[in-house]
Image (tube, rainbow, N blue to C red; front, side, top):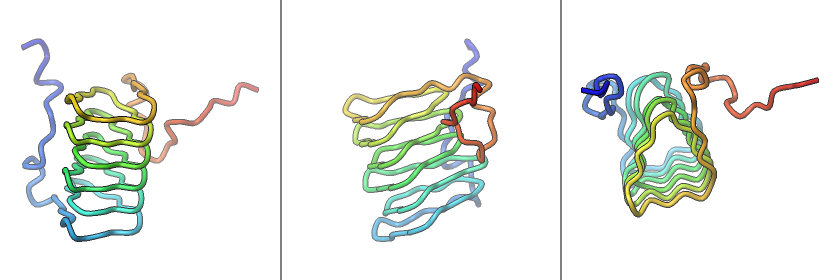
Length: 140
């Protein structure tokens, strides 16, 4: 009802066979690019980019870098900008130091953001992942 089918939340179970889990004691240094889902229980020092899919930063997870994906769920710590081209969900233990770019956002009481909130309209959300969403137009 009310178009709720159009904006269903993504869940990690949707990506059976295409899900990567970074364990709590693991650390990855370097950029990641993938299709599917990734759950970060450990540390990632680098940018994370998903063509299609979901990035989940669990309560114990830590990311230092830019996250860019259609669906992003955060309940851990992120130092860097987050670009959720469809849906962004911030749980109670989310701690973000960076700007948030989102099309739809849910935020639970207790989540903390140190940065700007930037709504993406439908046209902006359709930009290719490689394009810089923060580029300033040249008006010369």
